[in-house]
Length: 171
Length: 193
Image 1: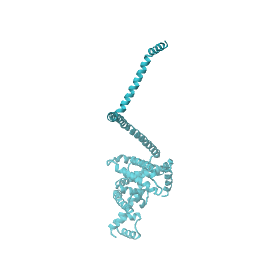
Image 2 (image 1 turned 30 degrees about the vertical axis):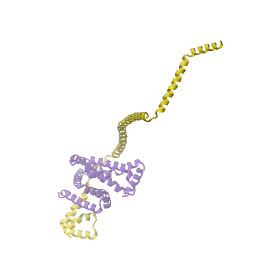
Image 3 (image 1 turned 90 degrees about the horizontal axis):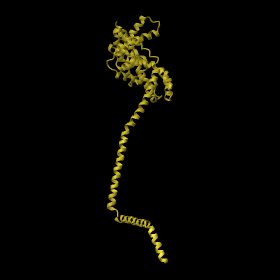
Image 4 (image 1 turned 180 degrees about the vertical axis):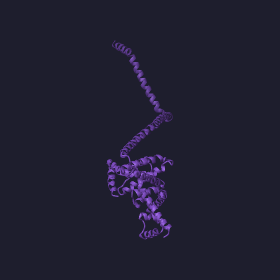
């Protein structure tokens, strides 16, 4: 085995990830090659040196802060949802108002147009007889009333005349 | 990983409306999540914010979790995605001086707290080593960095890493191989001193 091949197998050797056959071959090469020996030593040392990486201690109030943050974020989400719902409602108000105004105006125009149509329809197509009859009836009724009123007005005179006539008849 | 069996139970109870189970989950995994985010992003504030985002995502995605899926895979996938997104949205010109000072302060403080027997010289050397490793890890490509973190610090198997990263086991081995070579080159100066 040459140095180039051994260098490629040094990491698996340190990780214990080599077959028994390859391990023997690599180790027998390292025993005779100072350069590869040094390479393995450096790799091994640098890998072991990672142990000396000390991380700082986390603050004691980490959990308390975290729980507070979670609850405040949850409350914020609820508030935002409520606010957005409110905003959506108020944004719809002018739309709804304009829709209602348009509906009202439309209904007025429609009603007016319908009345016009109805009047013109009556004027053009309705039978004259009925109208006349109605008019006649009205006239007759009015005349009757008029006569009745005349009768009432002259009731005294009529009754006196009747009395005179009755007297004449008696004599 | 046996500890995750209990997590499945907690997650199922949380799905059924027991909110205190989520708090338990946070308590169990807060350090694990923070370590991943810190090693990945290299900045305390960003790491803390991202850790919070991860737990909020878990909280909101509680109904999408199914017990058939392994909790580790689901959990680490959320962590990986959050970290990658954060790194993607990160401004290219970030001030690293503050974070370095912060790291030094925090590291020294935690080291003193953890091992009272350490001499100030040892502490200083360890701090220096920690900074060098941090720099070396920061210089890795995003996928290489995540693979190294999951493999080296969280001790996930190749199969688990492949599931989390959404690639084949062969691709994971390749990523790890390149990461190790890069780390060796980045740390060579320190060893050659």
